[in-house]
Length: 71
Image (cartoon, rainbow, N blue to C red; front, side, top):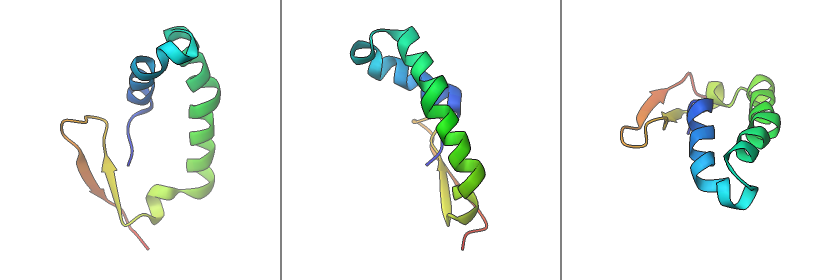
């Protein structure tokens, strides 16, 4: 599964704003921790390069399977 980072943050703002203390707190936490961790993981492990199928779930109403090179 994959989604654009902007969409990930948008969903988190809606989902986590109450537990994290507001939209700005969500944005800061995701930009400072989650997204940088994801970028590091993607650069080191290249999960989309070894997966058989990647689903682009940026638009939850229109998920698109994306084939990769796979194993």
